[in-house]
Amino acid sequence: MSFLPDFSRRGFIRLAAAAPLLGQIAAKNVLASAATALGKDPRQNIYTRLGVKTVINCRGTWTYLSGSLEFPEVQAAQREASGYFVNMFELQHAASRRLAELTGAEAGMVTSGAAGAMASAAAACMAGSDPKYIWQLPDTTGLKHEVIMVGGRSAFDNALRLTGAKLVLVGTAEELANAINQNTAMIYTTDLGSDLQTENAVAKKYNIPMLLDDAAGIPPIANIKLYAQM
Image (cartoon, rainbow, N blue to C red; front, top):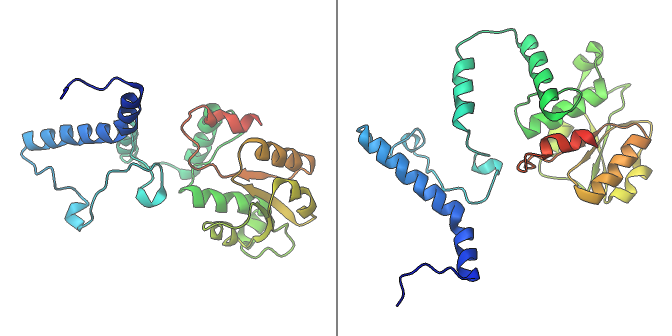
């Protein structure tokens, strides 16, 4: 029996596939050692104290698995920000400018998450910047109120409907143009690649705003600027 590492192609693939799990296990061991050194029980945390079991996430940025973990620099920024009061309107404008710099877009907006982004986008496309119509929602009387969903409904489309929007379903990118009318406020899609290119061309032709829901699109980090360039 050989105790040497298997450096064959098959062995490399096995090791590469296990790398994320091994990395998490190693990190967990380091944290456990640090907690022990500080005289704390490494098995105890805010979740275990509530009776909630922690898991090793090998699936990705899924909402039901907490989305993702924050980098230490993000946590540090949150702690710093929590020590001050600011005017939220001023902060929103400043955040918009910074997001525009990072993405190459005209502006940006920090939302509560993907569902918040869907609702905010639909409301903006229906009401625009007129305070009268903003306060009127979800009553869409006199407003363009139809949102075309390419590919059919999803488990999350209630985020669009809560604004008062009416969903119009189309099966493919090729059917999109036929669904556009005088009440179309926005196009919603999760498509990528050639289908997205087709839908984007139709949206530009008819001057209809399009919301691309690519909530798990990063990494790669290049996607931060990709969609704003389309």
